[in-house]
Length: 213
Ligand SMILES: C[S@@+](CC[C@H](N)C(=O)[O-])C[C@H]1O[C@@H](n2cnc3c(N)ncnc32)[C@H](O)[C@@H]1O
Image (cartoon, rainbow, N blue to C red; front, side, top):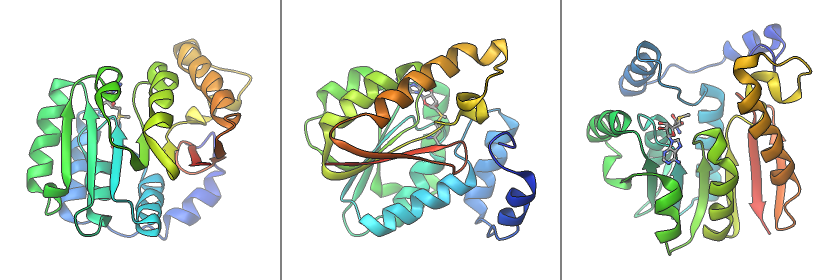
């Protein structure tokens, strides 16, 4: 995070952060204690705003984890709108189910269990909004499926495109070399799609934001 942002600016922005309700606080605590990566708060707030703005009927999330962003999206959905979310880790599926049950927006969520690489080719109906947040080595293939499943005029958001600052850095620790390679290769593809109006926003860990032409 602090490799992307000037710490003074980040502290200033954070001073305006609103306190979350008990369920989100419980989920954040669980994620921290159990080392489960969930979306940065600035990114989650931005996604809530986008959902409110575009009023999607059908949302697809790739990589549920504990359903933190899933629940935040579901709460913003109007009427009969739904969020479908795909997760392959059995541990995360069990935790996500527990939190979804606790949420008042639980009925707007459909959890699809398994690898998105296998599930996505079976999905037929298109989506208005797709949020890609899976393993980084799967990004390219899941993005290709997403472009098929995204409606024209639909929005796609992809997390971690600045990858803790390493995407733009000349010095990448060994541990991050492989994942950084995937992110850099993905960014080139994402930013040069002829049928996508795309940008990378310095929000959270870097959000790819695209509108299908
Ligand atoms: C960064 S976490 C997701 C965080 C979540 N979207 C949120 O905003 O809180 C990534 C999750 O994606 C899952 N995942 C990774 N690759 C996947 C795939 N190909 N299919 C389904 N789930 C996948 C992992 O098991 C992990 O739970």
